[in-house]
Amino acid sequence: MEFDLPVAPLFRPIDVAPAYQKVADAIEREIVNGRIKPGDPIGTEHDLVRQFGVNRSTIREGIRVLEEGGLIRRDSSRRLHACLPRYSKLASRLSRALVLHEVTFRELYEASMTLEVASIEGAVERATEENIAELAGNLARSEAVVGDAAMLAECDAEFHVLVAKASQNRVLQLAREPAAQLFYPTTEMIVTGVAEGGPRLVAAHRHLIDAIRRRDREAGVLWTRRHLQDWRRGFEKIASLDRSVEHMYMEHAQAARRR
Amino acid sequence: MEFDLPVAPLFRPIDVAPAYQKVADAIEREIVNGRIKPGDPIGTEHDLVRQFGVNRSTIREGIRVLEEGGLIRRDSSRRLHACLPRYSKLASRLSRALVLHEVTFRELYEASMTLEVASIEGAVERATEENIAELAGNLARSEAVVGDAAMLAECDAEFHVLVAKASQNRVLQLAREPAAQLFYPTTEMIVTGVAEGGPRLVAAHRHLIDAIRRRDREAGVLWTRRHLQDWRRGFEKIASLDRSVEHMYMEHAQAARRR
DNA sequence: CTCTGTCCCTTTGTCCGACAAAGCTAGAGC
DNA sequence: GCTCTAGCTTTGTCGGACAAAGGGACAGAG
Image (cartoon, rainbow over all chains, first blue to last red; front, side, top):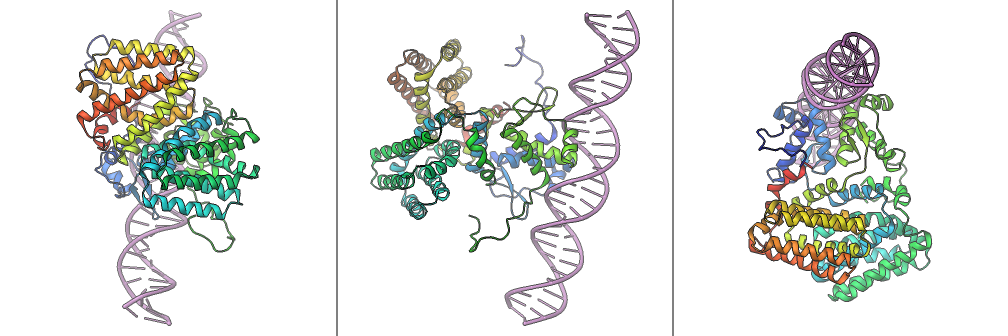
């Protein structure tokens, strides 16, 4: 599309990617197409130097690219191995992007309404006993910390991760994560600011688990909606929905990014 | 959460992040909190060497991290400047992750049903004249290439990006992108394999634009559903919905990743 | 025998210095 | 005023170097 050639081109544009990029691409290819499986060790830097025939600095730049992309990690002993990118890490990149694009809480709210409703529908339909047990465990912890806004907000975030997990739909799990990460910091503020916030939040969770147990889709959707509307009402007491996420996010970004 | 300390810890874990990471974090912080605005130039590598007081190799490793994260880019002259992470680039990272997690087309289908319906609802409600013009332009191009499966698939992908854009909800735009990127390669196969595929696809687009124009939410949702169900029926003629995305994706991954 | 401290080798993180290629800049020449 | 070239700048890559930390083998203490 870049330049329309009037005749069939004789030559393909030659590949001028820098060496570190080629190193990264080569390793990525091996991981993506399965020749290197998650968990498999990649050689040491020196091994890669020998294999690719480039300088160690070049190898290291390539490694940084893959590390940031979540495809490889260093274990405790700092040895390299392939790994499955973790949703929460990838999502935090997206959250950051959303912040930079100055999305508003209205957009966040609308999208989350859709995504969380879809999650609960999946969970109602397909949650396993184990999923339900995890949710119940989370609920118990929430009840124990209902007075502590920070802890409760953390539990709330985890609860919704668990619901999404119970939906058995990983695409949904991933899709909801960026928005959810941006929600999280505000939940704490709301629970702090609104007297009835904590108990209502826990009550909603209880109803949601109940709906999943009874495979009652209507109830699940209803309580998810209410839960989010509660959030919205609480939020609007502090700020406008049309406010950009930027300010509120900043205070919490650093802490969150340290996985 | 990593290790529960029984008493209040006396010491914070000391910060042992490597220097290149600190460089990346420092620059990232400046960008995220707005002191460096998208488009602003970052200094040359040599400048950064002076400012951070570390070696150029170290600086370069830090730069790779930020580049991969989409926070900085090099323009034509390869000078560094801050930039807004682009959705499609971030999403391709997510798509890759989904592939590695071996998600099935069923998950993809279910999630997309939710996300595309939400997009059209937003579009019906808030599409501007400009959005509609873009969609109409896309439709015209689709009609022109209805016989060419590859081109038509490309138009289809773009059409849905435009619908999401018309929803004015960037969170949704971002959330749908990973799944959409994985859909794209299959559309071509389906249009090739199913005789009526192309015309039906274009017809659906026409109805969707019409629904947006008339602000007819019901029609929008209905045709989005039909459109996706068409995809599903077509797909099931080639393969099972429970098949993992992995195989089909591989052939198209490289081409797509070269932006 | 298990545990512990030590020594050595490997690996990583960082630094230094160097050079070719490509971009940019400014002055020479018209 | 315009073009062209020479020189400076910047990037991508290279080679080599070294300190710090990890891991393993091995000897000695309990």
